[in-house]
Length: 542
Image 1 (spheres, helix red, strand yellow):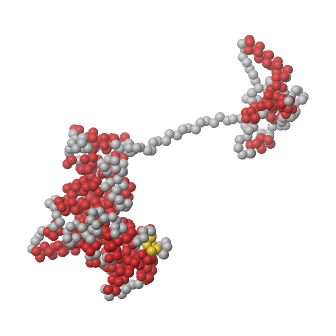
Image 2 (spheres, rainbow, N blue to C red):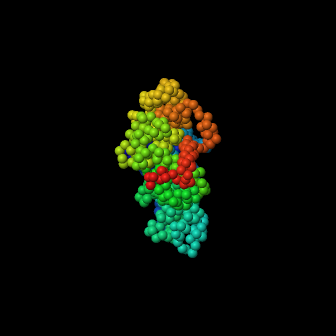
Image 3 (cartoon, helix red, strand yellow):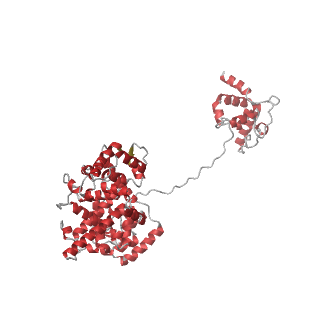
């Protein structure tokens, strides 16, 4: 019954569909019953029987079989194929003329979205060319290009003449000329390569560390980070910088006068390291990361050390004058010279310029945990962080330091009540000094106009960092002397700022204080009839 139905369907088929070479294989598979009925009718035709017998005879005789009728032989299968037609002569329905643009049925199929089940013959598509992506990640760093490697090896051969090794005092040219690093890293680089402490670095050992280990292709910050860090650590500590400072004190001409005072050498090295971590280690955890090192200006300052013989012109971190000011300020406050400062000592800072409330917040260790192991006492490192924050409130570390002090509830915003709490003591001090008091409501409007916060009800740290005058907010709240100087707009300070716009507030303060301390020291020397450079009182703790 199914075959009979299929035959009826086959007889009713559109004549165009009988041109089987144009029928997609998918359509044939979906209508297998119709195909089978067509095949049965084709076999029943007399012409088919004759053709099959002829092919069998040719095969027995060993002749070449030539079966025509493929779509490649002609575009019109019905007229060109020698295979017998399903429709006897005269009974085949007439075919409509084929247009060059295709029949309407084909056009409808072609205009529809997606491929048609009765689509056009398949076209050969060439495979896409596989693009080779060059390696872009190297676990141990990018290998050096051939020309760079050969150039470096040539310079190495020149310095490691006759293949002999170099001792530590001969290693500085390697650090500067080949590695292009600041010379203060000579000792630490030498000891990094000479892991066995043999006292000599051979040519092969240096090539293996610097070239084969791909240090040569790293940026300067990454090179210094790898040289300084201890194995297994992904950060630097204060301890890692001690060899660098030792090399600086031993080699820089601007520090030769300290050769006979090892105590001051030690204090100088400590102060420099504290300043480095204050400015660069923004996390404040004592772990200096590679990212922090890259974002800071330490490398530029170290490179300047090789170019400048006057150490005091290297204002970032290494100026001896800056160290001298910090140390003398600490020594003035440390009356019992136990190298610790309490609240009563700190309240005397800057001629009693700070309020008791802000000193209490500092000793509550809100802005920074003290490193001293004595309860209620501030150590020298803690004082370095304090004085750098106090004398340059335009720097980001300083803004963060004082913001934590004023933010009593620690919610990340400075509210009106919090600021008024600290200003109340300022107002009381102005009244005691017979100064015309400035009401908090008036000063608040002035601060809002100065900062321009996103929300006028409170200040955020982001608001303060966007404004160059934000340091004055803290002076208004807890430093009376600087508040009055800001109100009076000291023309001397304004002229100083205009003459040296590149100097920071800390640079100007340290310069003024060093001159004052030098004049006081010269006066004491003149009164004592002594020409010694160092005051004995300053050497007392050592």
